Image (cartoon, rainbow, N blue to C red):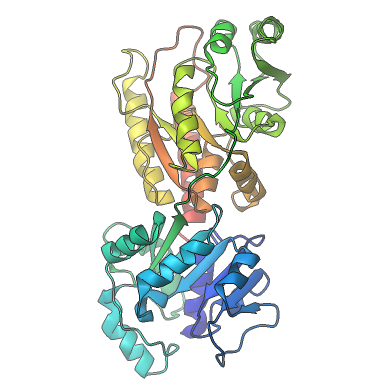
Length: 442
């Protein structure tokens, strides 16, 4: 039971603890979990000497100053909340050594399983640990809030903690994550981020990436309407094999407005919006990255709100939401509206974070966080032709805080949409199922 159970925990944690990450486990009662991360840059913390066997590759720290110097990406608490006599003090101490990138990963157990856990301990089916606190989800959230942390996502796992051929895998992978059944699971895994102020003497600048295909009629207005946000913003327009004169218009406007704004214009090498967005991100030089659609359905004037949300650390991935404010009469067709609402609910279920609208083209994040998503793209592979969804799934799987920002949605005034309702809807559904198998049904 022990080896199977800890292999499950390792698989669940591996969703957001990637091989390039560093990890510190706080006061483990045994080496059952940290030993599985021995090929990572791993460490454990003990405030005093304790007779526990750990792999030679795992560092051992005796003070929080050591952890601060180690600067881990992940601080892991495996069951600590159940036996820590002063949870709030412990969390506040951890908060003091956290940096913006740090994520707190907490494993705690459902009180529904308390009798069975005690029985398993008595029968030596699990490591003996001194559980004395049995906390509700609300208790844990409140401790985190008081200590200066913010919950990013929470997952529910394990209905069958013992290995039964075929049965265990089917139950734990496909049934445990489902609504209703997840409330009966044994294991809760919560990811939190420290709430820290952005201390900087200078304001960051923004790179606005626009993928433009057959949008000749909107290019000049788009450039004129981009507001100034940071001290040295830039606009990157990636033209995507248009059949009208979009490229000629882009080049003309780049020259015309070169004295008013830093504009970079390039032609796309591959195909699809996703390829264009990635090319734009690769050219970006500023601290904050934004995606804006060229059709002006989301007003460029909304971008400062996204900028403020990032600068004020309201979130790490700011996602535009078109389904809050009233929209223009012909901005979104009825079946598109139904599809948007369905995918918003489905994405919320799969990612463990709330979405009101996943299909809005306006999204903002820092260049540093984009680099993390790009480095971890191997986990999902190159599966997204739109460029929006590998960002969403990547940000969620890496424990980034995703925040919806309501925008006004306007009717297109030039040309026709490049999106095929049914063809791309089916493709998006396939992508969602693929991501669900990688993130939810593990």
